[in-house]
Length: 279
Image (cartoon, rainbow, N blue to C red; front, side):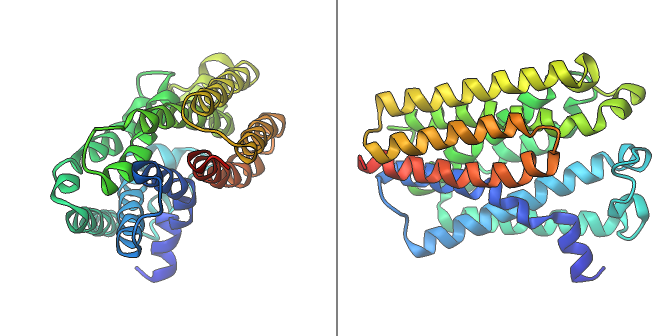
């Protein structure tokens, strides 16, 4: 087990999707940037949680992955990473996550189990429901709340963060549907559930567009109730354009899923900062 194999297995670069949401929630806690120490601990906690989530997904789905032409070259399927090595990586991510949560506050450590339940449950969703995408979105909705609670270990004033979490549910569900179109035929043959497998790709993409519309309207509500400023309006418009582009280029999954979504994440962060400051 070498460093290249480990980094390829955990795909730590995907943390770029979650960090903007973590820091958006943190910023909403006190309308300011958290301290350097807390920021570093939040990054460590987010990275550790990401490792646990992805490693569990790979471990639980390893037999499915070995049969899927798209995923049969993953490390566990190929044997370039042994199962016990995958578990070592999982436990390493868990230790990093829990240790960082403990250093942040006793409150965070006390409630650190909640996302872990979601990480362990999500891989099983596609075995029994076509709404698995919303299940993953629900798991992602914990992210901004985690950032908020890292700064302010209290539920007081958390409503805007919960609304941002609602945005996360439908944003994530929409782009997870787009990603799932790559496995439409395999999922159907294997008896797995997803909207593309159950409805077909074209109808599923329309559902993804509907979810993205809801996510955008959630941000409109956030602006109308809590935010202000002309720059914030421009960022809101930019996010709307990016969500439209994600739908427009849904057949280019690499562009829609990875590149556009990474930009949306940072646009959301800028939207939150700008709106909170009234820019």
